[in-house]
Length: 71
Image (cartoon, rainbow, N blue to C red; front, side, top):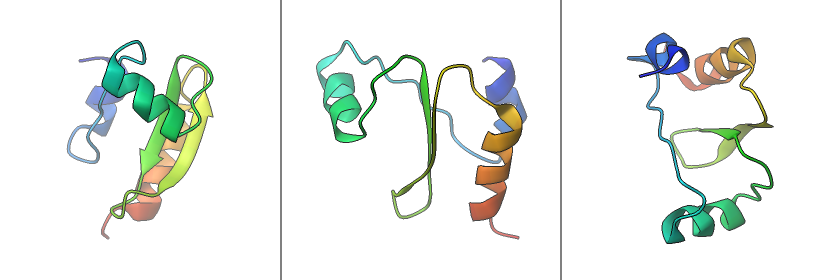
């Protein structure tokens, strides 16, 4: 578990997808992933509410997750 996963523990589920696998490649195409790493945040309806290629911006990710978390 890396630092981001520890910070999000109990708030969001972190999933890592290998874009070189068949399933990962299909998902990368579906969501327009053009760089690795790419970080996507989905709401409860499966809609992407935040996307970022490159090193994750922890504060922006936390803000995106807070916007969909029940209060």
